[in-house]
Image (cartoon, rainbow, N blue to C red; front, side, top):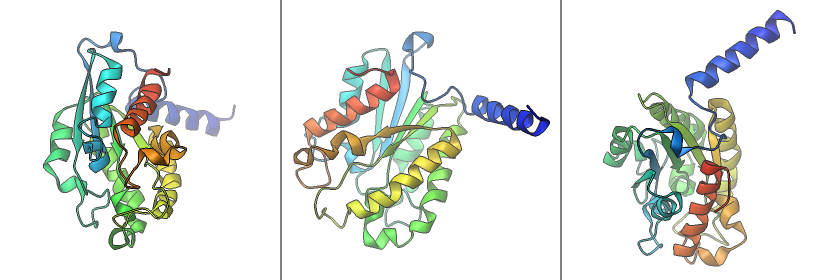
Length: 225
């Protein structure tokens, strides 16, 4: 190993240590002295629109059990991008999510950004996502951060939301995860084969939210429920 390679390897290790434990490593709640706190950040899909009171964070709580505390900080209609019509980072829910000092943060934003009035600013998507993630990484709790590939948008979509926009976002989200040492939860794959679970072509119903919860559980715990 030459000196350049050695220094680069040291930098990589240092960066990982600064960002906390490897987010792909399963979380063992037994290693925590208190409940493992999870902040679920997102839009109406996280909030539970269409799920009849059974949003994916609620179902994730049930799957994980009483050694975990899952907080739902979803706000309907919100965008990731600051230039979007309703930016998430301007919301009280965002400030509350930071204040939770979570051990784990799950972010699922981008769906509303695909609307034409928002996606015209798509060149800012990556930078704004980086800023959002960095704000959580800077917390004293040093949470593991997971970013989600957005849910699929079947057919022609609805409310101005499109699958074409989601498809543009996915490689950006994957790059962000690689660059910043994040975990990825693939909500798109979790629902792609079952469009009937998104009856309005945007919001998963309770069964669809259940599949999302299972996808998150599998990544967090390293096993299927």
